[in-house]
Amino acid sequence: MSDKSERLAELRAKHGRPPAAPHEPKHDAPTAREAQPRFRGLESGHRACQGCGEALAARLVMECAGPDVMVANATGCLEVFTTAWPQSAWRVPWMHSLFENAPAIASGMEAAMKAKGKNTKVLAFGGDGATYDIGFQALSGMLERYHNILYVCYDNEAYMNTGIQRSSSTPHSATTTTSPAGKERMGKRHLKKDLLSIIAAHHIPYAAAASVAYPQDLQRKVRYAMGIEGPTFLVIHSPCPLGWKHDSAATIEVARRAVECGLFPLVELERGAVTNVMPIRDARPVTDYLELQGRFAHLFNGEDPRAQEERDHLQALADHNIQTFGLNGEGDDPLDTSGIAAVGRGGPVTGRG
Ligand SMILES: Cc1ncc(C[n+]2csc(CCOP(=O)(O)OP(=O)(O)O)c2C)c(N)n1
Ligand code: SF4
Image 1 (cartoon, protein in one colour):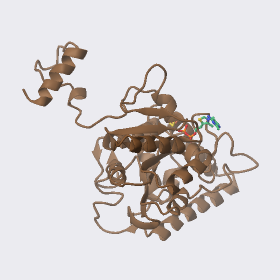
Image 2 (cartoon, rainbow, N blue to C red):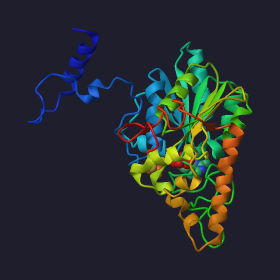
Image 3 (spheres, helix red, strand yellow):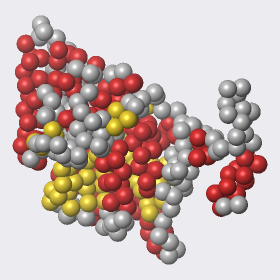
Image 4 (cartoon, protein in one colour):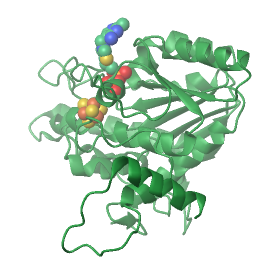
C-alpha cells in the first residue's frame, strides 16, 4: 500500500465513513474531504457570515502558507468566528492577541522560534481596524526591527466585529454606524488611508495588495512573501456582505469590480518601489462597483445634489490610481483583470461576464 492509501485507511478507521446514499457508486474512492490535496490551515467549520470575504481570504492564505507556520491573530471577526470556545477552526498553532498588539506578539513568537533553532514561519493577521488604526504602532515597530514575519491585513474597510464602525480604511462616502449618511454629510468625510505607501516607507523587502476576486494572484503573492527572510506585508480586499450591505452571493463580483474600476489597485512594492501591478483591461466606471452596495446607496439618491458630486469625487480617486500606477492595460494579457487569475462562480472568467 502507498503512503497515501495507508493514511486514508488510517483516517477511515479513526473517523468512520458515513453510509453510502442509495444513488452513490459503491466503491472505495476517497471522500471529497479526504481527497483534498491542499493543506487546509483553516477549516470550513467556523461561524463567519455567508459570503464573508475575510473567511475566504484567510483560507486562501493558509492553503499556501502552511503547514509549518504559526499565527498571531488580533481581535476582530476572524478571531471571533474561528474560535468559539471550546472549538477552533485552525489546524496550526494559533494565538489570539489584543486588538493592538498582534505584531508585537508575532515578534515574540518569531524570536522564540529563532532561539529554538526552528524555521517555523510566523504569520500575523489583523483586520483593517487592527492594522490601519489600533495596532499600527506595533506593526511599524515589527517592520522596522526586520522580523521574519508575514503580516496579512484582511481589509473589509470598517470595524465589523463590533457593529460596522468606520476605520481609517473606510472609503470616502461610505455609510457606517459612526459615519452615517444624512443631512449633515454623505457618509465618511475622510479619505481611505494609503497604508501601502506608509508600509513601503519602511523599506521592507515586499509589500502587496491582493483581492479575494483574484485567488491565483493572491496565492502567488503569499508564496512569494513566504520565501522571503524578513518582514513582508499583504493587504487583502475582503468584502463584508453585512457591513457593505451587498448580497452574500456577490462577494467575488463586488471585489472584482473594486479592482476593475481602479479603486483598489493590485500593486506590489519591493524595498519601497513599485515592481508590479495588475493591469486593468477596460476600466469600469466606479458606479458599477458602488451600485452593488447598500453602504453607497445615498450616492444614488437622484434628489440629492451632493450625490453626483460624491460619485465624481470617487471616480477622480480611481482615475488617479489608474494614472499613478499605470494600470491601463491593453490587448489580450492573460495576467490582467479579465485574464486567467480571475474566477467567477463556476470557473475562470474568460471575458466580461
Ligand atoms: C483597544 C480595544 N479597543 C476596542 C476593542 C473592541 N473591538 C474588538 S474587535 C473590534 C473591531 C475589529 O475591527 P477590524 O480590526 O477591522 O476587524 P473586523 O472585525 O472588521 O474583521 C473592536 C472595536 C478592543 N477589543 N480593544
Ligand atoms: S461581519 Fe463581515 S467580516 Fe465579519 S464574519 Fe460577517 S461577513 Fe465576515
